[in-house]
Image 1: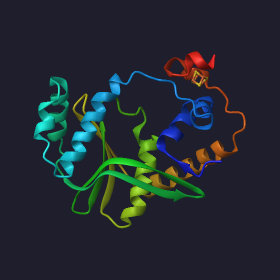
Image 2 (image 1 turned 120 degrees about the vertical axis):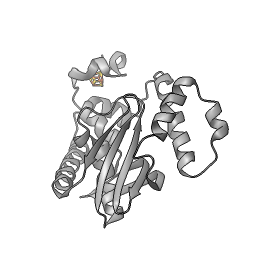
Image 3 (image 1 turned 30 degrees about the vertical axis):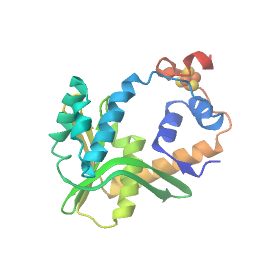
Length: 210
Ligand code: SF4
């Protein structure tokens, strides 16, 4: 029985219940190449220091040319230039009997309008409005802020230099709460953890599972 769910847990179960079983019940981790993640990690760390007002000039000089380009893209982004409320913000809220939460890259605002920022050096989700990360973060910040003008989630696509902005409203709030309650309940009552063989080609457990 799980009481706390991260977006990754929900996404993994959606991807394949068997993969969820391997990762979160048996605790198996298949080593993956960390190279694609390294660039993203550096940019996230740099952005966090920058938003906290820490002098990053020496760190900037250690970036590779391609990292410098991405960093400049983020610095020029219209949302990244807004006022910072929080950076690397751990947040959670309760939906029905389940706690959900995660760490937001940043929350920025202009007056009463708030934006959750998510920096992407890879690709953004295929269905961003109903991605579990979007749902969990928007629901959590909505609870924390209580009163605001508008609330949005912004995927900053650093690879293609564009933003994907998802607004939040009462209808989405109800949809999100229902979907999250449903999948958390499904995870906690599942006894079979069936394989979803349509995703095997993109799964690190491919060799292990068969
Ligand atoms: S290899 Fe396929 S069936 Fe096995 S865990 Fe991955 S997605 Fe699921």
